[in-house]
Image (cartoon, rainbow, N blue to C red):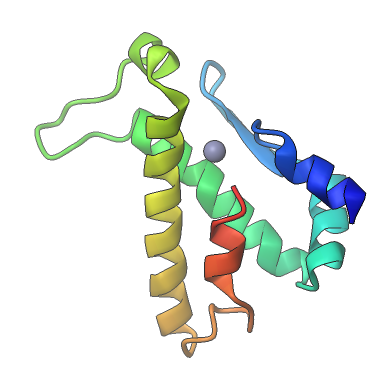
Length: 120
Ligand SMILES: [Zn+2]
């Protein structure tokens, strides 16, 4: 469990990342595989949550709001990490709730998605 504690102590995106200047999403399969096994969920289920989180970053950065405004890349870069992560967490949680209900209420993959979503 020490390895897991060290992984979660890292405040950076360790399971995946959104590189906003490219823009590009990368998923780190080795870490996802290790973490999925350690917490007892499928690699696929954890991957869905990680991908939803990284897509939420991309959508909050590149998407247009109701006023057709976009988050300028330099302002996105200067925004406090807690705000950027909070928005991604919110949309990831909404996505998991919607998918969970659509697929029978079990989180879509028979796991506690709230636990997974709160890992980030
Ligand atoms: Zn994030």
